[in-house]
Image: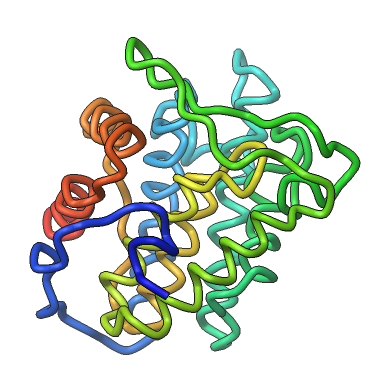
Length: 249
């Protein structure tokens, strides 16, 4: 099956670098562990969470932060737990680009936040509500409908993973493509971009490549480019943006 047709979007494959430095798994996981509070804070800012970096660091040190909503605190803690779980999977060589890993990470990322978590839309009690993505003045993006048993979402996911494994050899390009694949197809009711970025970093670190975090300072640029991606289904701009996040770390 054609790569772009299976994923639902295209990109200029010449724009993704193939000369990426690789290291030992121990080295990249150690760096991820060292930068954990930064990764968690960056991810929380992308979600509009008001926690400051010092507050995130305090919370991760086991000390509660006063004056913040419980839901905002739980989101930060979910991101931290998801990060630690991903780290453990990669260290133990148990990370896989498959549905089980994807849904397992989602069960941690979106716990008590999404309508349901830990399975695709339609595989739980809710089988009729289809969420959409707000694009501001550009309207809304609506993904595949939620159906009982999620037949279409499962088909699209299996086809997408198959073409990524068969047609995208370099793990860096594969990782970025999976992030955008998960973000576009909206396999879950919420937490799609977060969970897909965790999968992206699992692919990278498992290949000895440092994880990527979208800096908090680039949140507006990230959101603007994601809107254009949803509208045009051209991932070239977002791919270049994520490369920039990697190179400027």
